[in-house]
Length: 258
Picture 1: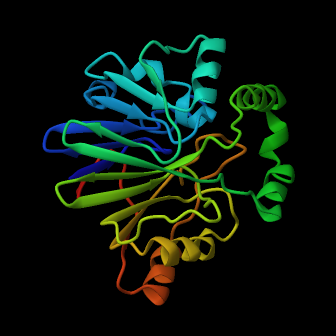
Picture 2: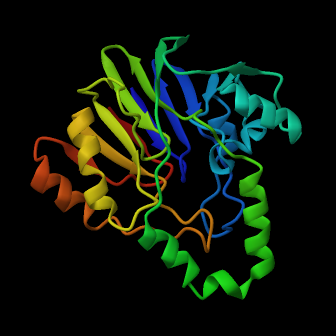
Protein backbone atom coordinates (compact mmCIF):
# COMPACT_ATOMS: atom_id res chain seq x y z
CA UNK A 1 0.00 0.00 0.00
CA UNK A 2 1.25 3.48 -0.83
CA UNK A 3 0.02 7.04 -0.40
CA UNK A 4 0.55 10.37 -2.14
CA UNK A 5 -0.32 13.84 -0.86
CA UNK A 6 -1.42 16.47 -3.42
CA UNK A 7 -1.67 19.39 -1.00
CA UNK A 8 -4.34 20.55 1.48
CA UNK A 9 -6.28 17.36 2.38
CA UNK A 10 -6.11 15.60 -1.00
CA UNK A 11 -4.72 12.06 -0.84
CA UNK A 12 -4.33 9.25 -3.37
CA UNK A 13 -4.01 5.73 -1.93
CA UNK A 14 -2.91 2.79 -4.07
CA UNK A 15 -2.90 -0.89 -3.19
CA UNK A 16 -2.45 -3.67 -5.70
CA UNK A 17 -3.47 -1.42 -8.55
CA UNK A 18 -6.68 -0.29 -6.84
CA UNK A 19 -6.77 3.42 -6.09
CA UNK A 20 -9.02 5.67 -4.03
CA UNK A 21 -8.92 9.46 -3.84
CA UNK A 22 -9.77 11.38 -0.67
CA UNK A 23 -10.96 15.01 -0.39
CA UNK A 24 -9.93 16.31 -3.85
CA UNK A 25 -9.32 20.04 -4.12
CA UNK A 26 -7.66 22.28 -6.73
CA UNK A 27 -6.46 25.09 -4.39
CA UNK A 28 -7.82 28.05 -6.43
CA UNK A 29 -7.37 30.67 -3.70
CA UNK A 30 -3.59 30.45 -3.70
CA UNK A 31 -2.05 30.35 -7.17
CA UNK A 32 1.42 29.77 -5.69
CA UNK A 33 0.56 26.25 -4.59
CA UNK A 34 1.50 23.35 -6.90
CA UNK A 35 -1.14 22.11 -9.33
CA UNK A 36 -2.83 18.76 -8.75
CA UNK A 37 -2.11 16.25 -11.57
CA UNK A 38 -5.70 15.61 -12.57
CA UNK A 39 -4.97 12.69 -14.90
CA UNK A 40 -3.23 10.68 -12.20
CA UNK A 41 -5.73 11.64 -9.50
CA UNK A 42 -8.65 10.64 -11.75
CA UNK A 43 -7.18 7.15 -12.09
CA UNK A 44 -8.85 6.32 -8.76
CA UNK A 45 -11.87 4.02 -8.84
CA UNK A 46 -13.67 5.86 -6.06
CA UNK A 47 -13.60 9.18 -4.20
CA UNK A 48 -14.26 9.51 -0.48
CA UNK A 49 -15.16 12.83 1.15
CA UNK A 50 -14.41 13.07 4.88
CA UNK A 51 -16.69 16.13 5.12
CA UNK A 52 -18.21 18.46 2.50
CA UNK A 53 -16.33 21.63 3.36
CA UNK A 54 -15.20 23.84 0.49
CA UNK A 55 -11.57 22.67 0.52
CA UNK A 56 -12.49 18.97 0.61
CA UNK A 57 -15.39 18.82 -1.81
CA UNK A 58 -16.07 21.71 -4.18
CA UNK A 59 -13.90 20.40 -7.05
CA UNK A 60 -14.91 16.74 -6.89
CA UNK A 61 -16.42 16.90 -10.37
CA UNK A 62 -13.07 17.84 -11.93
CA UNK A 63 -11.65 14.48 -10.82
CA UNK A 64 -14.30 12.25 -12.42
CA UNK A 65 -12.93 12.32 -15.97
CA UNK A 66 -11.08 9.01 -15.62
CA UNK A 67 -11.79 5.77 -13.80
CA UNK A 68 -14.00 7.06 -10.96
CA UNK A 69 -17.14 4.94 -10.50
CA UNK A 70 -18.42 6.20 -7.17
CA UNK A 71 -18.17 9.30 -4.99
CA UNK A 72 -18.95 8.64 -1.33
CA UNK A 73 -20.12 11.69 0.63
CA UNK A 74 -22.71 12.50 3.29
CA UNK A 75 -26.34 13.15 2.39
CA UNK A 76 -25.75 16.78 3.33
CA UNK A 77 -22.89 16.87 0.82
CA UNK A 78 -25.07 15.45 -1.94
CA UNK A 79 -27.75 18.06 -1.22
CA UNK A 80 -25.18 20.85 -1.42
CA UNK A 81 -23.75 19.40 -4.63
CA UNK A 82 -27.18 19.47 -6.23
CA UNK A 83 -27.85 23.00 -4.98
CA UNK A 84 -24.60 24.41 -6.32
CA UNK A 85 -24.47 22.50 -9.58
CA UNK A 86 -21.60 20.21 -8.64
CA UNK A 87 -21.37 16.90 -10.46
CA UNK A 88 -23.51 14.51 -8.35
CA UNK A 89 -24.67 11.66 -10.59
CA UNK A 90 -22.07 9.27 -9.17
CA UNK A 91 -22.57 10.25 -5.53
CA UNK A 92 -23.51 7.64 -2.94
CA UNK A 93 -24.62 8.64 0.59
CA UNK A 94 -21.96 8.00 3.22
CA UNK A 95 -22.47 7.74 6.97
CA UNK A 96 -20.60 6.64 10.06
CA UNK A 97 -20.07 2.95 10.88
CA UNK A 98 -20.07 1.83 7.28
CA UNK A 99 -17.74 -0.55 5.47
CA UNK A 100 -17.18 -0.13 1.74
CA UNK A 101 -15.08 -2.29 -0.57
CA UNK A 102 -13.39 -0.84 -3.64
CA UNK A 103 -11.41 -3.51 -5.48
CA UNK A 104 -8.87 -4.82 -2.96
CA UNK A 105 -9.34 -1.85 -0.60
CA UNK A 106 -11.73 -1.74 2.36
CA UNK A 107 -12.81 1.61 3.82
CA UNK A 108 -14.44 1.85 7.25
CA UNK A 109 -16.01 5.09 8.46
CA UNK A 110 -16.07 6.48 11.99
CA UNK A 111 -17.89 9.49 13.38
CA UNK A 112 -15.48 12.38 13.86
CA UNK A 113 -15.48 16.10 14.63
CA UNK A 114 -14.06 19.23 13.04
CA UNK A 115 -11.09 20.96 14.61
CA UNK A 116 -12.17 23.75 16.97
CA UNK A 117 -10.17 26.87 16.19
CA UNK A 118 -8.58 28.40 19.27
CA UNK A 119 -8.46 32.08 20.21
CA UNK A 120 -4.86 32.47 19.05
CA UNK A 121 -5.75 31.23 15.56
CA UNK A 122 -8.78 33.52 15.30
CA UNK A 123 -6.91 36.57 16.60
CA UNK A 124 -4.10 35.83 14.15
CA UNK A 125 -6.59 36.41 11.33
CA UNK A 126 -8.29 39.43 12.89
CA UNK A 127 -5.00 41.26 13.48
CA UNK A 128 -3.30 40.17 10.28
CA UNK A 129 -2.89 43.26 8.00
CA UNK A 130 -3.32 41.00 4.95
CA UNK A 131 -6.92 40.39 6.01
CA UNK A 132 -7.73 44.01 5.15
CA UNK A 133 -5.57 44.61 2.08
CA UNK A 134 -7.96 42.79 -0.28
CA UNK A 135 -11.41 43.05 1.35
CA UNK A 136 -13.22 41.91 -1.80
CA UNK A 137 -11.22 38.70 -1.91
CA UNK A 138 -11.85 38.07 1.78
CA UNK A 139 -15.58 38.61 1.33
CA UNK A 140 -15.61 36.23 -1.64
CA UNK A 141 -13.90 33.45 0.32
CA UNK A 142 -16.27 33.91 3.26
CA UNK A 143 -19.26 33.68 0.94
CA UNK A 144 -17.93 30.47 -0.60
CA UNK A 145 -17.20 28.95 2.80
CA UNK A 146 -20.74 29.62 4.04
CA UNK A 147 -22.18 27.64 1.13
CA UNK A 148 -20.48 24.46 2.35
CA UNK A 149 -21.38 24.14 6.00
CA UNK A 150 -21.24 20.78 7.73
CA UNK A 151 -23.45 19.51 10.55
CA UNK A 152 -22.21 16.30 12.12
CA UNK A 153 -21.25 14.78 8.77
CA UNK A 154 -17.52 14.47 9.28
CA UNK A 155 -15.85 11.08 9.26
CA UNK A 156 -12.52 9.47 9.95
CA UNK A 157 -11.59 6.79 7.42
CA UNK A 158 -9.74 3.54 7.98
CA UNK A 159 -8.32 2.37 4.64
CA UNK A 160 -7.01 -1.19 4.67
CA UNK A 161 -5.67 -3.78 2.25
CA UNK A 162 -3.38 -6.79 2.49
CA UNK A 163 -2.85 -6.51 6.21
CA UNK A 164 -1.91 -2.81 6.05
CA UNK A 165 -4.06 0.10 7.21
CA UNK A 166 -4.09 3.88 6.98
CA UNK A 167 -6.19 6.06 9.30
CA UNK A 168 -7.21 9.35 7.67
CA UNK A 169 -8.58 12.28 9.67
CA UNK A 170 -10.28 14.87 7.50
CA UNK A 171 -10.05 17.37 10.34
CA UNK A 172 -8.29 17.41 13.70
CA UNK A 173 -11.20 16.36 15.89
CA UNK A 174 -12.51 13.24 17.63
CA UNK A 175 -16.01 12.24 18.69
CA UNK A 176 -16.43 11.28 22.36
CA UNK A 177 -17.43 7.69 22.93
CA UNK A 178 -16.22 6.36 19.58
CA UNK A 179 -13.91 3.35 19.70
CA UNK A 180 -11.39 4.24 17.02
CA UNK A 181 -9.14 1.46 15.71
CA UNK A 182 -5.58 1.49 17.02
CA UNK A 183 -2.26 0.38 15.61
CA UNK A 184 -2.67 1.61 12.03
CA UNK A 185 0.45 1.52 9.92
CA UNK A 186 -0.07 5.23 9.23
CA UNK A 187 -2.15 8.06 10.70
CA UNK A 188 -2.72 11.06 8.42
CA UNK A 189 -3.23 14.14 10.59
CA UNK A 190 -4.42 17.60 9.38
CA UNK A 191 -1.98 20.11 10.86
CA UNK A 192 -4.04 23.32 10.73
CA UNK A 193 -6.43 25.30 12.94
CA UNK A 194 -4.62 25.68 16.26
CA UNK A 195 -1.71 27.81 17.44
CA UNK A 196 0.23 24.90 18.99
CA UNK A 197 -0.44 21.97 16.71
CA UNK A 198 2.65 20.08 17.93
CA UNK A 199 0.95 19.88 21.35
CA UNK A 200 -2.58 19.43 20.04
CA UNK A 201 -1.63 16.29 18.10
CA UNK A 202 -0.43 14.37 21.17
CA UNK A 203 -3.85 13.15 22.44
CA UNK A 204 -4.59 11.86 18.95
CA UNK A 205 -1.38 9.84 18.94
CA UNK A 206 -2.31 8.49 22.36
CA UNK A 207 -5.75 7.45 21.07
CA UNK A 208 -4.78 5.97 17.71
CA UNK A 209 -1.31 4.62 18.59
CA UNK A 210 -0.20 4.39 14.94
CA UNK A 211 3.10 2.95 13.79
CA UNK A 212 3.71 6.15 11.81
CA UNK A 213 2.14 9.60 11.47
CA UNK A 214 2.13 11.89 8.44
CA UNK A 215 0.87 15.45 8.25
CA UNK A 216 -1.36 17.07 5.65
CA UNK A 217 -3.42 20.29 5.39
CA UNK A 218 -0.50 22.45 6.63
CA UNK A 219 -0.27 24.46 3.41
CA UNK A 220 -1.66 27.95 2.82
CA UNK A 221 -4.88 27.11 0.97
CA UNK A 222 -7.00 30.13 2.01
CA UNK A 223 -4.82 33.21 2.53
CA UNK A 224 -5.30 35.29 4.64
CA UNK A 225 -7.46 32.86 6.66
CA UNK A 226 -4.73 30.23 6.55
CA UNK A 227 -0.96 30.29 6.44
CA UNK A 228 1.90 27.87 5.93
CA UNK A 229 1.97 26.16 9.31
CA UNK A 230 5.47 25.62 10.66
CA UNK A 231 6.15 21.92 11.17
CA UNK A 232 9.58 22.28 12.81
CA UNK A 233 8.27 21.39 16.30
CA UNK A 234 6.26 18.40 15.06
CA UNK A 235 9.07 15.86 14.73
CA UNK A 236 10.73 16.70 18.10
CA UNK A 237 7.34 16.56 19.87
CA UNK A 238 6.57 13.09 18.52
CA UNK A 239 10.08 11.82 19.24
CA UNK A 240 9.94 13.08 22.82
CA UNK A 241 6.47 11.78 23.66
CA UNK A 242 6.08 8.77 21.37
CA UNK A 243 9.56 7.59 20.30
CA UNK A 244 8.11 4.36 18.94
CA UNK A 245 6.07 6.26 16.29
CA UNK A 246 7.75 7.20 13.04
CA UNK A 247 6.86 10.78 12.07
CA UNK A 248 7.35 12.58 8.78
CA UNK A 249 6.27 15.64 6.83
CA UNK A 250 5.39 14.62 3.26
CA UNK A 251 6.59 16.28 0.11
CA UNK A 252 3.78 17.08 -2.28
CA UNK A 253 3.29 14.66 -5.19
CA UNK A 254 5.63 11.95 -3.84
CA UNK A 255 4.66 8.33 -3.17
CA UNK A 256 5.25 6.86 0.28
CA UNK A 257 5.25 3.12 0.86
CA UNK A 258 3.33 1.91 3.90
